Image 1 (spheres, helix red, strand yellow):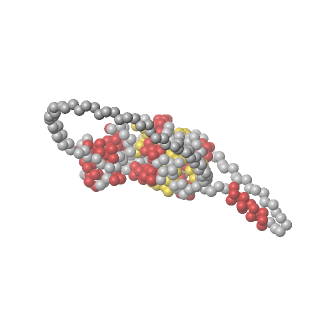
Image 2 (cartoon, helix red, strand yellow):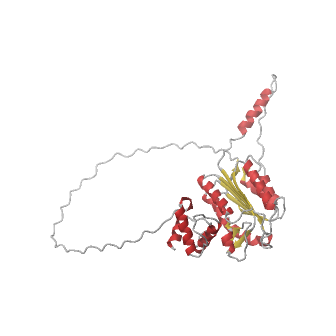
Image 3 (tube, helix red, strand yellow):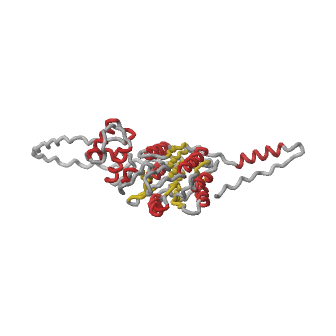
Length: 379
């Protein structure tokens, strides 16, 4: 891993009265050589799924629990507010990702890190993160049980982070090629936005994955440059690691040096020319008035009253009645089976993803205002 070079210390001169002056000189030199550290808001999402029980297709991943714990601890040491979930069931990963996205949107210019260790599968060339409760009896079960990996990446992009990192760990080696290809499609806008992305196949170690160990070591602060983290991961995981996105500009995950505020440019005032009197032109003679016989026109027919289209807000502003109306619309379309109780649990989230799949939207499991209004209008 690349390391910051130590700051040079000024040589202090010892005089005849004693060595304390030299010590003071060294301390002052250290303070002068070390710039102040900026502290933007820092948010992290950490998910570790290990206890899969769906048979050979989704074997357990024993290293994901300890990996998630050690990454979360390293991030908290750097001052990150961490949303951590272990062995998530249906809907729990969705809720955690949504909470992470809300924190980032509320603090533009913050730093975001997402670490997910668990099975990732593809459907229609799109990667999905699977909860430990997943049971894929049909190919389309991925739509109702998985969390779209794109939602994790978009949480950072839409949150307008100044720096970010997304790590997908624990990928099954048998399907790694297809998963890496689908994840690479998500990385195109990430790098220019200052977000790094990496993924690695699972090495089945019960005490943690190699990627998690390398990430923990690379996050040693107080100053963490994203480029150094990526270099450290390549060194710590020489096989099975893919760097999906590398930001072009230097980005700090922690300990960013304080920006130097540039002096404002001088304001140059250009005097306005003296106003000149407009030229006076003679007024034209008025046109002759020609009398016309008025022709009566029929009054337009009053338009028939149209029922007002029902519009709904996004989920955060919905009332209980709005949520029940959404569930009733999903049930009418055959996507939701259950009572319209106004509670958006795993079954409702799965039904929402089915609706989003049909309209070609991102399968987030969370309705925007436009999607909710379209849903109830189509009922």
